[in-house]
Length: 229
Ligand code: CA
Image (cartoon, rainbow, N blue to C red):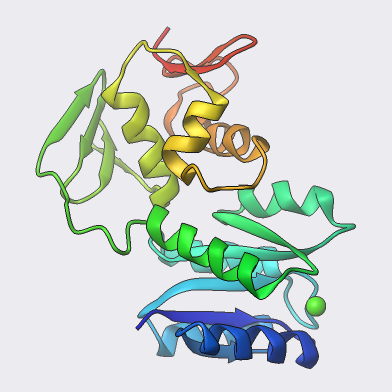
């Protein structure tokens, strides 16, 4: 059974989310503060996805996200944002979240997002290729789902890994943002295209020597991106 962490300080919202997730068949771990969430995660290393509220009484949801990602690149992270926090969506994704859901959300929307994140982060993936892809200074190991640049291991989230794999499999091929969104997030994803740009920006900071002048994740103006100049 999939285990989900729900971090939300407002009892009524947390109760609503927890009841609906349990009804949908998830096992749920609850937390009302950021510190509590980090403790619960340490006690429950088998949590698949964490739902993080942003405005909390102690440390905010972005900081919780950063601290989780410092040690765990595999867990799925979804930020719970308020409608007025448009800018926070991008900040959340830059700190390593995989997705965001805007409040108020329906139980159906929330479980759809959780399922999508589970699929994307490869939690259910058991058909892993044992191959390696080598492109320039990079080696993508598809068995271990790791990326090395020379002797240096680059820490990637599972979503970032999926994006890099997509590019490294088709070097030089221009891909539209829609193509990338559909390949990585799935055809049923109903978020916006901005999530593609945010992830590319974050990846450039990780893999490029000069993220402002990328050599690998290059922009195709007015269209999208491609691997290589
Ligand atoms: Ca809150």
